[in-house]
Image (cartoon, rainbow, N blue to C red; front, top):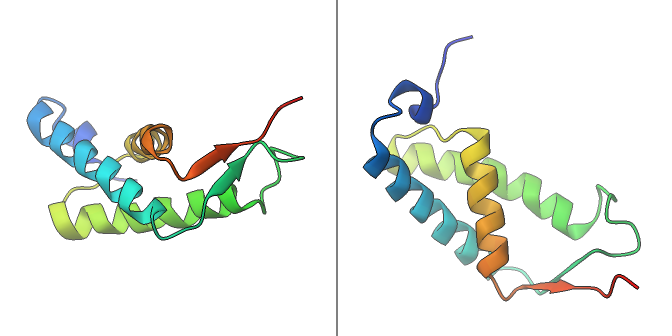
Length: 100
């Protein structure tokens, strides 16, 4: 298997990696606007059919395609995951249930 991720191929190109990650974070926040508020920590936080988990899978795939199409850049799974959760933390679309 060949190495495809730009971060691994050219780790010293920090400016490009940061620019792509900032754009990915904006991309996720813009996609969240397409959905109603999403509850976190429902009755079963490990329910893989829960809206948040389905949203995650779909947006990861779309973001990877967006990155390749827009930037000609192959983001690593870690970059996609980090940008997604940074966007979740900054977004007002997520509502956290009481954990009591």
